[in-house]
Length: 362
Image (tube, rainbow, N blue to C red; front, top):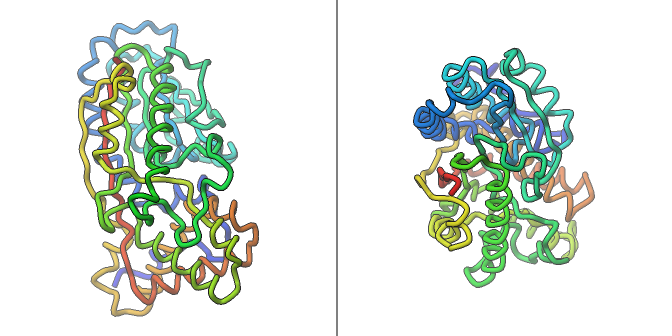
């Protein structure tokens, strides 16, 4: 069994937020870098003559949409910045991070990031939805990136009661007919994002996207977690701890499209005017935590570590949605305590399914 001192789950009596805690414990999503970096490196190599000829007066801007605190993209951008600097040592590089989270978490990340120590690199945090417009960036971004964000739907354009269901807490748990309205909303939101990103990019610039997807059956991101949360809410409703209205309002505001649905949007005339699809690759990234523990689950301590860690990870990315429907911390604590128990009784991995896209501005 791995040494216990390396098994330190986030404390269960905290209420993590997506920004400061998820980046610290989302080891599975951090593996996106392994898939994106080779494609981004190849793209930058292909435009090396263009990079070398850029004047030093204006910085080369890299924009990350849905960045949280910036920590997840840190290893990726360190490599990318190094490659750009090697092509043009006189060029300044500016990183623009876009997210709705409070800026404090980003400030803490940036203060200790190796990128902040480079004299030719600067950073800006824009607290805004990536579905909004960015007139200050129009035609200035040399490279765009969006990882593990575009499954979150644009809540500002949703009708009242849109995110409610009496027997489910996520659209991908619904029947094909019931989830269609969420598919349509995701498609409209994705098209909106593509339009705004296109407006910010320089001609010929690339946009790299890691889109979480549904590969069918239970092959959609962290399905075991969502299914456990649904079952817990149903149990608490039957026990009278949640009202029917509260149970229906506990709903995660995201949607995981299929690879076919992703390509369908990109194949529409409106999207093809904006971007050319250079590459598309779908894959499953195994759960980092379950993979480490799966051979030692006969040990109660290992099972306890895995259950606590998985429940903390789930809380970090789901509680912001749960809180909207359930403004009662004691009840939310009960939900995530039960989630830990379910993961202990039946350990399951939280695998992530992705469609990696490389888009070039038309």
